[in-house]
Length: 484
Ligand code: NAD
Image (tube, rainbow, N blue to C red; front, side):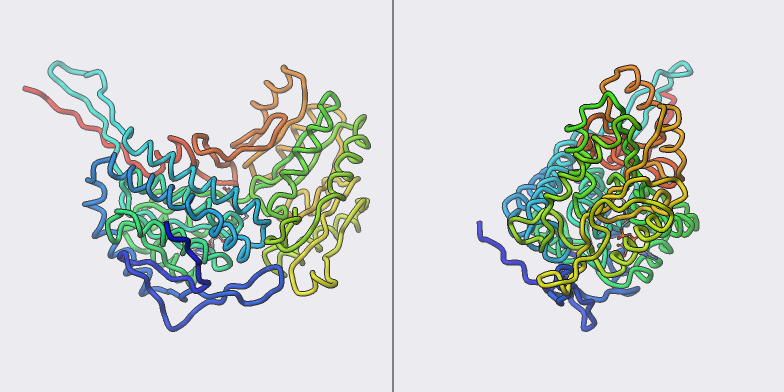
């Protein structure tokens, strides 16, 4: 195997060929604002060409033997793993997260591809009991067709594979647009995919102007499915546009995850899990804890434990070995976090740590925000309703279980919720009662290849991961045959 040294000049991939354009979009390092690379500024023309080639490739790819489709995916997974260190460095440079986290994300990205590589050969239909004499009833599972995939910047490797792998396993062909902040890792992942036996045109990557590319794909009747991960606002717009051709839609949108800590919980375990989740990716995680509800008798005990752990977090450039929290993605994100912290403090929250951007020395040109802990947070404050998407831990208190559940559910979002308690009955009641697509009990890990990831309410539609994620790219066809 030859080691890759990814250049920072990303490319589009259409019809199996590298594509560059005279106009480009700059990619910056969020740790210092420097321009580190560029990608083609694709628009309507390239987006349409990508759909042309994906629809031409569809009949052959969808009829390939399932085990051959699976083999292509397993080859892709192995190539990703072979180059995991270089990919992690690239991801960390353009996105900012610590390289150790980036490595974890690249490995997760490969796991999704491998898992769907295995599942491709298990997609099957059903034979139903007949309703009449001499009747045969069957159900086929068939790929939906060309699928358009749009991914965000916060997990720019895992989101690419969590969509592309099930789509390709199902027999769909794909067109994918990554976020403009993090297109280089998508371009590198596609380069590795192009080195497999995937037929030309079965997977296409277009970087560039989001609205022109998105509108081209949504307005094209040949695109039968849109799978989007990103903000709730953009997701709603895409859903409206998808109505024109009645496209299948999957949406993985924003969250406002509560963590409920009861007085009987193991508080060290809760603090470890909450801080690990809350400050992963600098708090820029859709299923990241937004609100920490703690039962009044243990408020100070939990707060002290959280504070001790937060004070030990080292903020720095993601490629530094000793860094736990990297920069935020851009200046706008820093301003949004500051505005939410200021609003909370003005309305009576107590700032226990942090609460400001880091601007001096090594931090001077980057988008760094000091890990922050707020207590005495209440429901009037904007950060209880808006996704903070930054390294801020707001602590609220509650008296009884019913109150905690009512307040945790009092949001239009419903992606994830977390629960810390040792009471079996309560675990049973709350895992049923919390309005979320996913509930973590005494722990916060929720993304696994075999499990359904996704939300309810305004956090989205559909699921990624597991057989559930595969179903999103399959249509059912019912066939009734009279045998005589
Ligand atoms: P975003 O909505 O701004 O962008 C997401 C993607 O949509 C990007 O590729 C962007 O270029 C594209 N886009 C933007 N406008 C578009 C348009 N008009 N037409 C077509 N495409 C368009 O979101 P973001 O800031 O990149 O990501 C952060 C958000 O994503 C957060 O709200 C987070 O909670 C959410 N998220 C959700 C999940 C999940 O699984 N539920 C996972 C990761 C991120």
